[in-house]
Length: 262
Picture 1 (cartoon, one colour):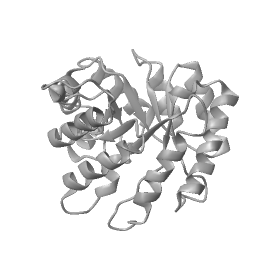
Picture 2 (picture 1 turned 60 degrees about the horizontal axis):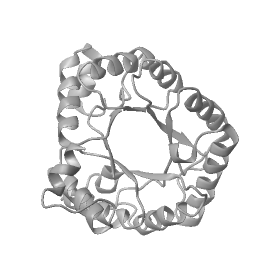
Picture 3 (picture 1 turned 45 degrees about the horizontal axis):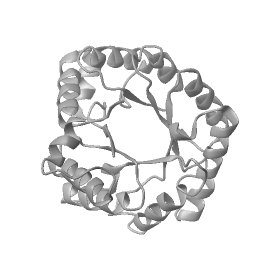
Picture 4 (picture 1 turned 60 degrees about the vertical axis):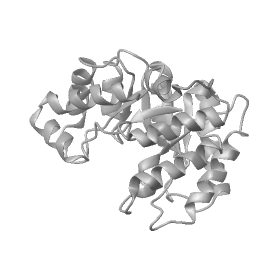
């Protein structure tokens, strides 16, 4: 399971303030904490209240890379900010994200190929997020076709079927699970799958329990990666245990410790 640490995001109050004030300390502290907790990538998001996203994201990439050698997931709808930041990444990055919208596909896929970056492709278009698995898969197929068209290796495409909060869209949860299953049948090799896991529990009580439970369920459907709280020890233990029970990693008595340190 690939863990993309979600915490360096301007939507969080401390990070938003740090970005506005160009204070590297909170970003670097969270970079270190997430890396020590077992994150595979660090998500970098300026947040919505940044006037100059290009400058802000470039600065965030630079200060995070001063303390962490993890690859970065550049998270923005501003593709100029992503492209400028890709130039600074010391390791191949991940672009978060690209919907199944032709103008955006034509902008993002060549950029990813040029910089050897991975893409998170969203199963949504100008009409929004589909309600059922079949329509999600139709959009996933457009992203798979785009990868073939532009020469993006299929293993570098991560399909996100977009989970919505269970308290307002409960019927989407099983549809997303089915979409993950079907995504694995779209090509050979199959694209990867990813979820912004924390979205499923947004504005619900018992958020950690909902996140952990849904993680176990979607892992069984073939999920490869999550954007999540890497510092939730119980969530990380769930991911580690899921790998053991799905025979994806070798059991040892210290398997949780191994999962976090690899």
